[in-house]
Length: 483
Image 1 (cartoon, rainbow, N blue to C red):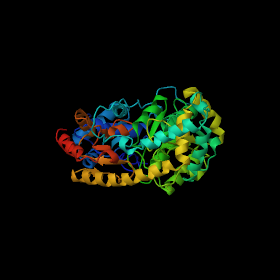
Image 2: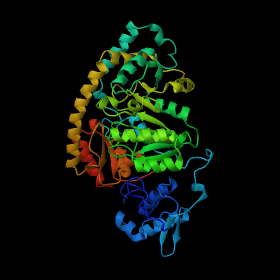
Image 3: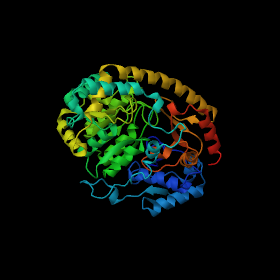
Image 4: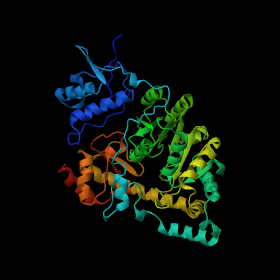
């Protein structure tokens, strides 16, 4: 039987590819070869599959046949494809491509993104009085400092003074865990305080889960695009990343099924609601399908609901649908109260509770009970809910203005603007654009930060709350002409 020709850029074969960027740091040949190589290594293109003809590939991607031939030559040199006379190029059968029967001892294929922390360092270091369009949190003037100060004063003045003088409970402050159980019920997630563990922010909660449930060599499904710090964190633990294209309703289920079949993942990490950077939210139908795949193939679902306070409570959560049997729910308060308090938490199946507490103890001993009780007070008194309502109203107005400014300056949103972030096409290589604008004091979040492997392109993430200044869009226009 003749081998079936597959297009690795088609939705049923692999992740939708970002446009090839003529101004990127990589040549068109390197970009094209890299896209094919990634899909072959993930077995989205199976051994024996035929690559598109040189002519078809050139037409499809707006490049010359010479560029395609050069890309295929690179794949030949890497041993990923073979040329068959008068038939074309085919994915090569390789003994190393087969799934191992035991966990591999070798290092994972993906190296930690070398610039994964660049944007965060820029946020921490500051040094500019200009708004930061690439900021990952609400601007400081959107936060309620009197609310935070009042909560701390009341905890210290009216609570047990000993909480400020000793370690907190290993699982976290009981008062906060009880308040969180009530809060989770708003999302349909049924959890008791004995299923909730606090952490130093949602990021640490994710790390505790990964360190407890994964081993070096394990495969983990991740959204793509997504936040590069999550890619780097997992890769540094020695796991293999399996990027799944994120669409309007959720993950590309065809790609997910192929990756599951070929790699037997141990976990899927996803942001279900107001996904970063696209703003998409998981549909109920997709949530059911993902749960069925996890059950049938025995892997954990890690649901990072970091943006829950900015989204309607009725949006589907997988933890609500499966009753915290296979889903591990993570969230925190950095996106709504303040990033400096670092209060996060996880809701987990009872059978995992003590194992996860043990990992937390080794990592950090305990979390600050004073801050945790202050957050509990904000939840109990309804002040957090009222603050979130004000923020959402203000964010809706900011998003409307940012969209108008972006479109007036010739930019295009590739996903419907929702939540805190916009996924924007500016028409030039955003990595170079970010470097140019950084020199002028503007912090951007270029698109390559949101991919598991380096992918130059014209996309970038903007923060709607910090893109209200018309001066930024004028500066963007000016910088685009220099790229």
